[in-house]
Image (cartoon, rainbow, N blue to C red):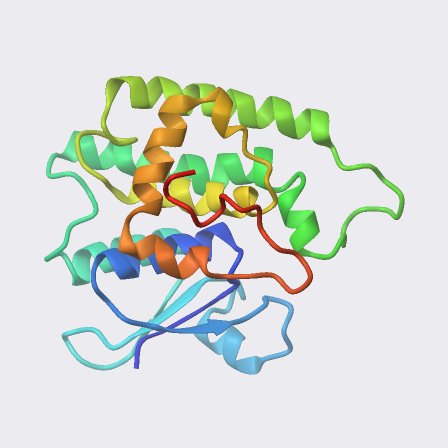
Length: 225
């Protein structure tokens, strides 16, 4: 049976869950932390990074795929009947660039500041240290300015149809939105795009995730927010 190992509120794991759902591929989700003392994790991926996709490809056998970039390419090659990349080489390059933008650059410059420490229960921050609200606000406004620039010229982030770039952005923003950190009202183009993303069936699974002791804002799972 196909399985996905990862963390429910990790943007990279959410990205893979969205890609699987968009391709109509079911998978058993196994909540896994990289620090878990599990020899099986090292066997599947010696780097011990998540997410890890365990699949039984059409060609037979079993394969463990990681990291997230490899998973994205594997799904596109093995299950290309529902493509999530554009038809042209230039379009594919742009979609991959923007996928990396959100799963790497946005993650380091925005998600890592407030959302990730909250998810980790404050680990990595000294007791009493304030949250870097000013740094986060500057970072997310900068990224949203760029995202708005793209969406003023395109229906979707990378072009005329939805691609892996949109899934990466939605996965990343959804984690921050759970903590009500996203300034939607200041960026109507981005809000409209995200409303379209939230209306897709693939988003329902991740928007149903809940953290113990921390409820999301009322608009979190509402497409008409």
